[in-house]
Image 1: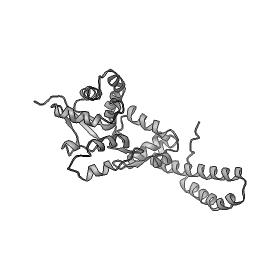
Image 2 (image 1 turned 180 degrees about the horizontal axis):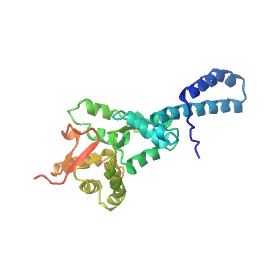
Image 3 (image 1 turned 60 degrees about the horizontal axis):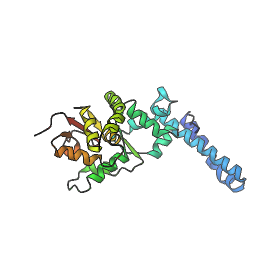
Image 4 (image 1 turned 90 degrees about the vertical axis):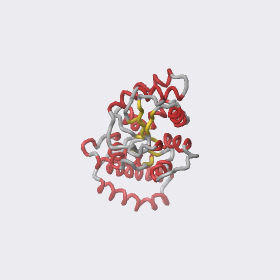
Length: 241
């Protein structure tokens, strides 16, 4: 089991880390292989503890929870692209991807990954009109995350519970996406939800596009709804035409 980082006073931990780094060159130069590795382990543990303590300062009421530290950091960086290296540091735990999934599915936080954005970017590659917002999102890498809005959607918890059933019972990606959207008319659906219900297929943006062409109302920023942040979709229950 991966060791969890301990939290403490960031300044105390910083000073201890400085001392360790000051002595590290000599330890690496003169120590045995085992001593060299032990020295690096000690530095790494203090570095992780410092990162977790900085994360804890954003969520003092639940400083001992890696998930709480992770959420606090994402909320502090809302609307900004966050790399997994940052999350690893502030969470102080190795299983932060599972904690992100919990924040989405069990708590309703609209967190999208670079994988979902990669799908959007690939589908929109031929589009002529680009603006500042789409360029920012399109720069996300697969190992990055973004909290779209600083609010949790409790309705999303139920949607995530239904997603597996909808995915498994649907004939194809388009029908899965449509069935999922129909369950939540007027709600703010994230790109991550659509990607998941599509079985993580990268074709879900194309499915959204095809549904629009068939007359279904699916609002999003790339479709002209400038009041919506990138990565959110709103389904209108009435089919046009």
